[in-house]
Length: 392
Ligand code: PMP
Image 1 (cartoon, rainbow, N blue to C red):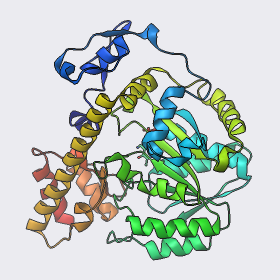
Image 2 (image 1 turned 120 degrees about the vertical axis):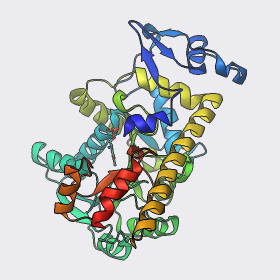
Image 3 (image 1 turned 90 degrees about the horizontal axis):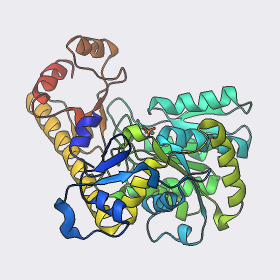
């Protein structure tokens, strides 16, 4: 899946590592080498080498210039929270480690908190909460909130009701965009309603943002929910990942951000994060943080990056429409959930025995019926459709 996605995205950013140097395919290399803003006319020049020895050393909480750029991409370039120095940010080993780090810090903060995860979600949410709860001597009580039913209809009333009954200081893990499993997200109006419940009930919103930009083609659009919560009185944390949004899957680049009203206690948070990182990974890595810093901080590269995100999104959307059209031409099955869904995934609510039958035909869905749309292309989509419609 990833190689397919990467083919349609982020090619300029990917690098080839030789014995002691890195070759960047286009202008990013010139920028790294000369450390000055490249001329857009230089776009076609072939990249040159950058010595690994030019990499900066990183602080215990990460590559500071990169973290500042990460705050802007997450909270918005004009964010008051950034201007008022109200965000503490720590580099992590991918999005997974950012979730892990963030939940560990909140576990220490709240002492025996209740944690809510989506009833349908990426499997690691449950595993991380359970692991932290069992191994760190501070219990976290795991709960689920409703998400979608078997027709892929969002159960927002039930979800909101559950939230309005939750205890204060409960931590609620939310998919910022591109819900990983169903591809179904709340609409802005619903996010606003939910934010109000969170503010009133003093719930802690923990956004997992692994697919920023891939839900709508626009980085700002996909960060709407977390920005709205953070700016409207909800205690907010974000675990973001660069694996998909920058095609840096193998690089393990992620960030945990936490908003501290008035910036109070920032130093203590940074110290606790550094202490936790000390035994997770000692220090975060510099290489890909430096690459991402160069991309995010340079107007020309950032513009290219946003365009590549838009193209990756367009391809996913193209596959969503093509798959939906093809299935609807052959069956009465309503594919609107797929057509209007966002991000890499969609879910077919199939009986387990049908999923096993599909696997025998070399159609591999997760046991919960989730498929990864970027895996589909013009040459394999018809076979996929022929196989799956037998069970719809
Ligand atoms: N959150 C979600 C919802 C994900 O789908 C993923 C990746 N599959 C992650 C976090 C973790 O991202 P990373 O690969 O950077 O660890």
